[in-house]
Amino acid sequence: MTTQLAIDDALINEALTLGQYATKEDVVITALHEFINRRKQQNITQLFNKANIDTPRKIILGIMEGRFSVSENFDDALPEHIENMFYSENL
Image: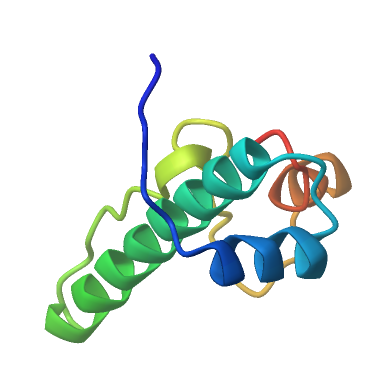
């Protein structure tokens, strides 16, 4: 889908330089992904803030939903292949 946006040249150029992106499209797509992920994180934080400590809650982890389960001992390390998915650029 093609969309035309009027974005301040100084702003887009700073993002191009800072992120070392090749195109303005790359900057906008990355910014949208980061915005979406940040809002999902805020939603999770709000769930924790509203949660009653005594009431277990199922919390959906957005893009990682259904890809792993949390062990009974929450302090156990995640398997390496799962941890690597969190740091993948293909999220």
